[in-house]
View 1 (cartoon, rainbow, N blue to C red):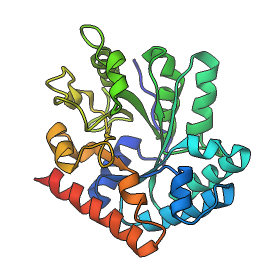
View 2: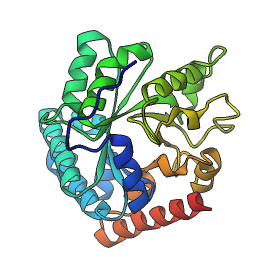
View 3: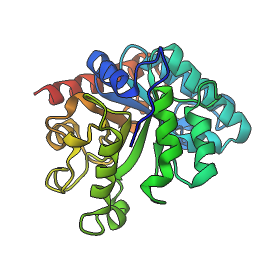
Length: 287
């Protein structure tokens, strides 16, 4: 399989990610504007409240972490006005030097998957992000339009592998080799040309009962960046991340939402919470 070359002038996503993590640490601040969180911030559950919340988080995250992860659903629920805020968030991330992980978990077939790819990964698209989460459960091959366009435009994708929600195990652990192991093998093929970190990442939770190696997943050979949810409200901490991804820590991105956003709306408190988690993760992963 031939992976498209990134367009001239843009560094491949995997290299950009490693550089960001090296400079700013592995924290990825999740933007999950639940109605109750907006209320806690004293904001209305409206597009304007959404905008005030989101831009406040971006300002606090600037120069304090590697990336942000807006959850598309919480913007989409406000209709076109909410999606317009999401467009502003993605543009604002670029302006502030933050990598964006658009958490949309799209998965479809044929021209529909091509449409999603163009929406999130095409140069000039209003919703273009640095990377997007994808679901492979219509078959890994169904993701091909997004995988190829991401490589061509120097962007990335994050394929659901072993997620942090307990319900995922009934699908992801099924079979021998497991569904998750087969996904990792296919990701490895797409990243084969990368020298260190490829453009096809894996979502692997920090809440796993055993390490990926013990579960039959060769993440090192996959050259995949790892997005590792589950730290904070779901029960994992920075030591779980360090233990689970030993030897891979230079390409692990750790999204934390509630553990950071609960410090707002006070800007200084929010900045302090981001810096504190950045320092905790950096220290544990460097040990």
